[in-house]
Image (cartoon, rainbow over all chains, first blue to last red; front, side, top):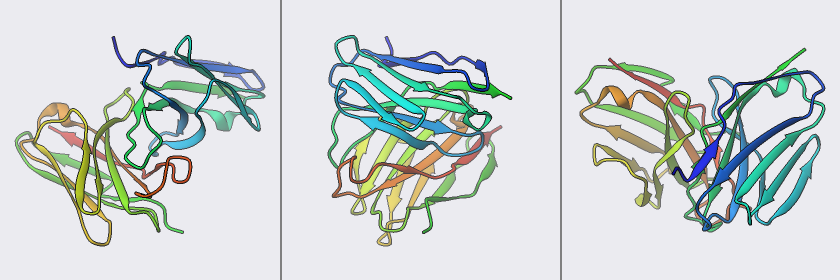
Length: 113
Length: 116
């Protein structure tokens, strides 16, 4: 079983739709949870990160963590064509200086005008 | 404020050859991590350098080696290239004395390596 599972999609939605992206993980040592966005031919850029279970909101984006189920989600409200990208979940054990990230495969999202 | 810069952007090598990829961290950062991203996959951690030493290593063979210079820039070397080494190689920088909350990883745009 892989440490992090993420449905690779692709996912295609109309502009304005609510998008739900998800990852599951198996290692309960993961304590920190992140979502990265990666445009084609670019490096990943950090969208959101959180430590605890619950919701964290930033504009149109909401990150949700359920540690008991080992399940994390990213919701995008009022999706825009500019949101079209690959979304990667990333997890890590420790928030100290020697951190390394474990990534999911990424979900390719297309938002159609 | 310059972000993470990587060179070259693209590279084509033949099986068995050796390759060196270069990375300059974001201004103010002193720690460099390298990741390999195969097509359709998420990035996989190769290793991390801080104070010119390898501090952590992922599950990669010894053919993958690195170096960090006093100016914090870094090189990734891969020997005896295999077809399976074809991937996007990403460099990420951060502050060695910071936590993730103070200094999250900043990624470069990567070097796309093709091994034929």
